Amino acid sequence: MDDKKLSKRLSLILRHQPEKAGLVLGDGGWVGVDALLAGLESIGWGMSVEDLHRIVETNDKKRFSLSEDQQMIRAAQGHSVEIVNDLEPVTPPEFLFHGTATRFLDAILEDGLKAMSRQHVHLSADRETATKVGQRHGRPVVLTVAAGRMHADGQTFFQADNGVWLTAHVPAAYLSQPSDP
Image (cartoon, rainbow, N blue to C red; front, side, top):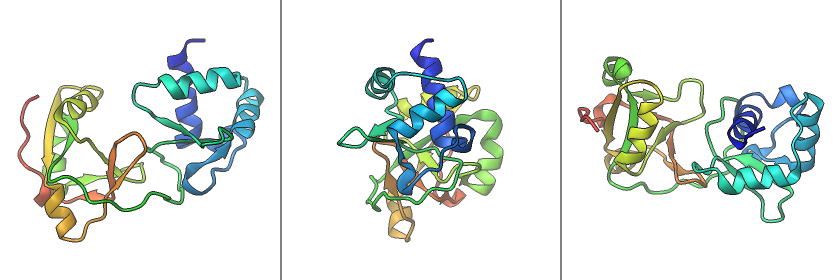
C-alpha cells in the first residue's frame, strides 16, 4: 500500500475516529504507538513500525508527531474528536491567511471563520500555503486575517507542531476582502 493511503488512514484514526481502532486519545491527542499499530491491525489496516516512522518523517504537511522516545504519536491538529489541548497560547504575527473556496465566501464574510467539525480554525502564515489549502475545496480564494488585532482584542492563538496557526473563531470584522491567489 502506498504511503499516501497509509497517511490518510492514520489521519482518520488519529483525528476523527480513534474508536474505529479501539483507541481512546489521551491529553493532547497522544496514543501509544504499540496500541495504534495493534488497533490498525485489528481492523485490517496493519502497518509496521517502520511504515509508521516513514510516514511521520516524510509527510509534507507534518500531520503527525512522535514523542521524543518514539513511544507515543498524535496528529498535529485537525481533530474532530474532543481532545485536551496541550498547546501553549502564543502571540501570532500581525497577519495570517485562510484559504477557502469561492463558494464559501459569502457565508464566511457574514459569519466569520468557524471551526465547524474541528476543534479550531486553521490559519496559515503565508499566502502560498493558504492557496494550496483553498484549492482542495474548489476555486481558491485567500482571506487575510488581522491576527495581531484579534490577539490584542483578547483572542487566543496556538501554533501546532507543524506550524499551522489555530484559534477558536475568526469574527468577520477581522477578515479582509479576499484576493485571488
